[in-house]
Structures are given as structure tokens and as C-alpha cells.
Length: 247
Image (cartoon, one colour):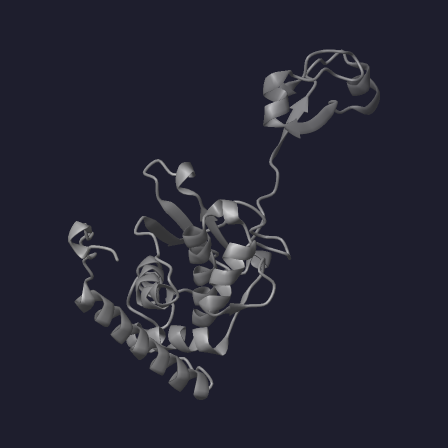
């Protein structure tokens, strides 16, 4: 028989029951709102938020934090969110619409999350944001592997993990947020309608009046080339070999 007098009991861990109850209460409200909005087709309010785009996105991160907590995950505090162009494939047909950078790439050790300008719908923007927050939570090195997949499915993402969609349940939560603060205050940019800047070429001419080209045709020999090439080395006339000058 073990003598209990010889046992040294470790102190019980302190639990913030108020915080636990608060998180559970928030999760209950989120759950109820999700079911209500999903049941009514996740209809958006049709009222644009007065927040900035970044305030709206960051507000949604905070709004959905209880959802992550409910499944045992914590959203890092060092997250910065912006509506901006991803670093690659921003304009292609198979474009990148969201991106999360590791803290190692940031001068102040912050997770940089970007939602593309090409996304304007509140539900889609919210889904893209949740996908990128999952990267920040799971860690960039986890990629779209098992850890990321388990987390993504838990918080309401579905489909192929490299291009997830949103479940009705997650859309219900995003919809609930939009009804509180207004819809995502952004208008989609259509890059196919962007006017392309034409390449400006310099005109280089041969000013040698004794040039055979001028003597035979009565006009100067000329070529067009970029200013970068001209600055590197001025071209020479193909007829007389004289150095050509920019007109």
C-alpha cells in the first residue's frame, strides 16, 4: 500500500474559465449564425462596408478566431492582411488569388497575407482569407499536406487543397460577419482591360551627307531601337558605317 504522505502533488494548472466560457459563447453564436444564414442561402446584405479593405479582412480574422479555437488551433497574433497583388501568376488564367508569406521573409517577423484585387465577392474573399490563415496556423513548411488539410476541413474549407472552396457552413459565418459590418469594400479589377504601355523606341539616323544611302535614295538611313540598347552602344549606319545619332 502506497503512503500518500510521501507523495508530492504537482499544483493544478490554472485555467481561465471565463475565457473558456467566452470562447464557447462566441462559438455558439457563430454556429447559430452559420446555420441561419446557410439555411437562407447565404444572402449578402447588399451594403458595402465603411471599413477599409484591410480593416474588413483583419476583422474577419478576429471574428473567426473562435472557430479555430473550437477545433484546437490558435491564429497567430503577428498577422498582417492586405488586398494586394500576389508575387506570381497575378494576371494569368490560372492566377494566384491568395498568398501567405512566412515570418522569416518579414523584417518584423509577421505573417503577410495577401488577397488578390481580382476577388471582390465577400464570401470568396473570406474563403481565400481563411485558406491563407490556415497556412499561417499550420506553418508554411506544411504546404497543403495532412496538417493543412485537417485544419482546412475543420474550419469549413473543401475541395482540392491547392484551390479550396467554402462550405455552406463557413459561408454562413462569413455572411453573418458581412451583415454586421457590411460587404467587402472592394471592386474587382479586370486586368484584361488594362491598357498596355507601348514600347517606346528611339529613332537613330545617319547624318553623314556623303552616305551612299542618302545619295541614292535622297533620305537618311534610320533604324529604331530601345533607349537601353542605344545607351549601351550607338548603332552604325548599314551603308557607310558612320555612328548614328538619336533623332
